[in-house]
Length: 83
Image 1 (cartoon, rainbow, N blue to C red):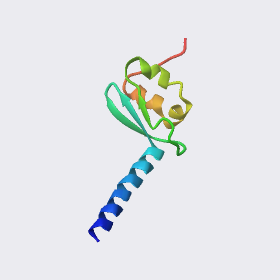
Image 2: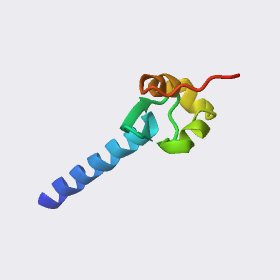
Image 3: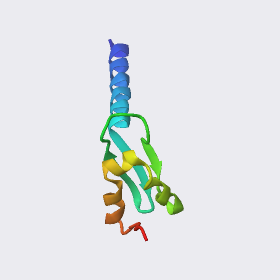
Image 4: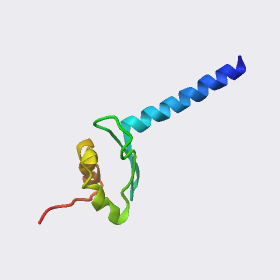
């Protein structure tokens, strides 16, 4: 019975991790770690490193733009404008 309880708890932890990976973007910025809710469930761009010069490349990813990355970075004082 104890083994069954351990297996059930382990499976619950795995399932919650999979749910989080399918529904959230985890973005590491210069100010820390931010999360954005994904528009469509997928495993693409689950973790994104947007520190330093890489943040400009992140602006070009359509999935992150739809999820609100530009607003998130704008709140941190990072704005990219066309000239």
